[in-house]
Image (cartoon, rainbow over all chains, first blue to last red; front, side, top):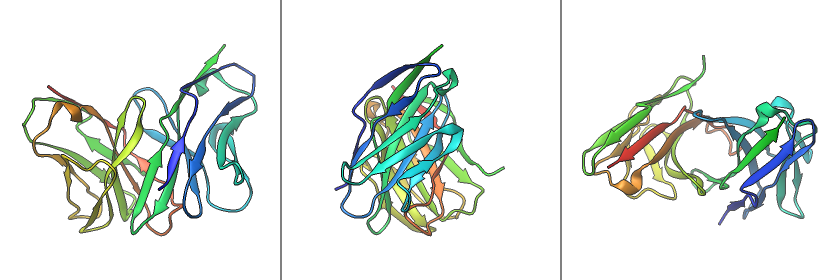
Length: 114
Length: 114
């Protein structure tokens, strides 16, 4: 069965510093991995996804993620954090088992301090 | 504007009083899904629909019903709500061409069952 782990409930970083939000996964077949962001009182917004190809995926708002098959990880990164990046981030894996099922991690709250 | 809409956005009800949360998308997507978000648990999939008249259970279907009579609509029905169904609910849609298709989320419905 597929699963997703986000080992950090919260990540704190100073504005201008690089940020990393961690995600590890477990799937039985090819991984289809996603990152979403949730701002207060808003729905989830898509950031980026890994389907196949380059291990470094670039997404919205300057975010990128590195797919590492051997470590089964898909960490979200940004070279220089902004205060406006403060939000709740979800990693997710999608699988086809006769229909599309999606498993989300528990979420990581990112605080960027000015 | 491409969007997923949900109504109502906020709902307070009492135990046992049937309710329906509506979801509609204007992107001609075949796939639609319902999730609930609870603190520390991330999002969990309730039901999904691969196309009109095709629905299936997600990971937490107990106490919920769905129907898909039209492509654009996917209502979530709680026939006898209980306090443990107090949660934040999200509807999402995507194309069903491939597992890697991006899901688009509605703004959420916050439900309180007393």
